[in-house]
Length: 308
Image 1 (cartoon, helix red, strand yellow):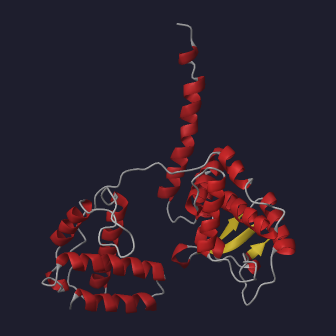
Image 2 (cartoon, helix red, strand yellow):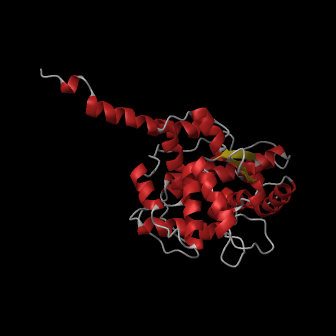
Image 3 (cartoon, helix red, strand yellow):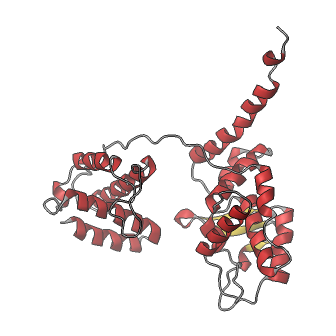
């Protein structure tokens, strides 16, 4: 069986299992790059070893950003460790599938250790920067009020871009102050929101929301059609630039998480809000919020203030 034959089988199985199109595309593209690296003489899956993946990792680590990309020009600098990790996890997931379904007797990638990722700081906004961002939309216009409501919901709820874009009017429970979203892995959860967000969502729905045309989506364009995720992403960046900030939806999610902890929230409730399966990622927000303690110690520490 060749890699291309195996990819056809993977796509069939993945669709039957209900895997998301993004997951399938990630695995297929990762294996495609791996197949190109191996060359035409080594396409039989039985001949591929863990050493081949290790050679691929080394090649990726020396690869220029966007080299051989169909749309972007090559850039200075090498692929990031995160990009290398993404490709390799896709390949490992693919070979795990082949072994699980009996296409291979063993999993040659099982014992291949991926390079350790550097612990990067999570980019967030300060409270003053959030306030500056929220001051940008013109709340007197219907579109401006909608945009303000979107920004405020991002800040308050830690919701993902895709979750916000796909929100239905029927998913919002104003009495219980939460809305229902479908998260990663088709995992449904309830996301709470505060009193101010409740008022803003209600005002948008009753006063500023156009009449929907053939959709149940909550966020709409002027013509009543759904507001797509890419448009939401662009409007977030637009208001960020107006405020002199670099802002994108996932940065809003980071910011909401850290501010929640700084204001007295706990990591366990934050984990549920975020929809994380484990506390590993949630603890990164906790570590960032704890940096406040260090900053205050540097400012108010006892020893540094003694006249000795």
